[in-house]
Length: 254
Image 1: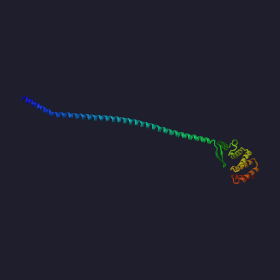
Image 2: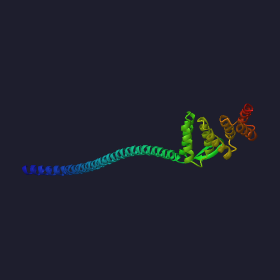
Image 3: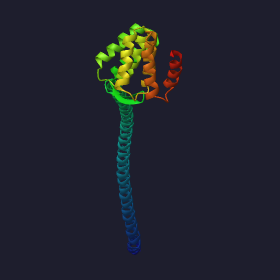
Image 4: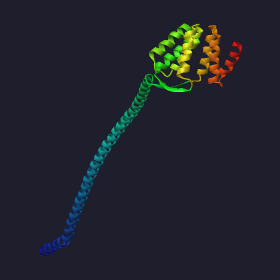
């Protein structure tokens, strides 16, 4: 009885073990899959982390590059601003230099004109005269206009001595004659007026010079000489204003 029970118990245990073996095998299989899944997940996580670090490094590098580029741009802007300022200053300096050069050139031209002959027209006669020549002539006439006959005589004689070939000399003869007449130096006045009539008979001052000669002769009480001079005036310049005055003068002398 006992042996039968023991045999039966052994058979049951063996059967149980045979039934339990597939389940244990299945449990072991599930654990391996889970471990592989976990390992795969870990690898994916690690790969993602590596990729994140790589991207983070790339972003940091890009930020540094952008910062360097921004610094370079700021440096270029600063350099460009400095260059613009330098160009503007250079433009101002160039403008100032051009103005100074123009002023210098104008000053040189003005100074040169003081020494260059200038075109002059006196009594319808055109010629060139040195600036100093013109000034000395104008100064001598200013003295005469003031009524300073001795002073104008000296000034006009000095002019003729310094500029013996001047285009002003015919006019100088006429005005010197007037200055001498004003100083009552009649013979000298007659000589000066006559030099004008002889040298420049076509001068518009020639008829006036003849009338002035007649006046000098009348002042010297030489009525005959005065009438001859007035006849000469009426004969050579009958249409002149001096001739009209000469007719009246001639009638008075007769």
